[in-house]
Length: 75
Image 1 (tube, rainbow, N blue to C red):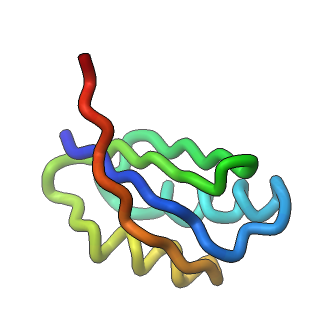
Image 2 (cartoon, rainbow, N blue to C red):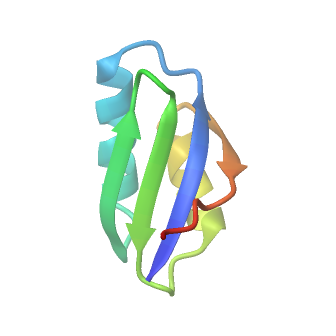
Image 3 (cartoon, one colour):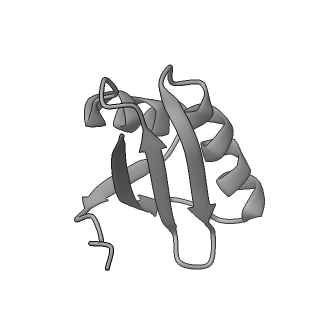
């Protein structure tokens, strides 16, 4: 399992967040997507076969840009 974290650029409303979630959920191997409109951040949990390139392509397909953020370590 992989965890990807992103800062989303270009979100203007909760509808934007939902649009991004739906786009990411279409990527084969994605298990969970959480988009927080207020902080403009997204967390994606996916199978190890999913690449960062696939996630970024889905974000761009939805009409947004993203910056990769380092994963937060769990305690």
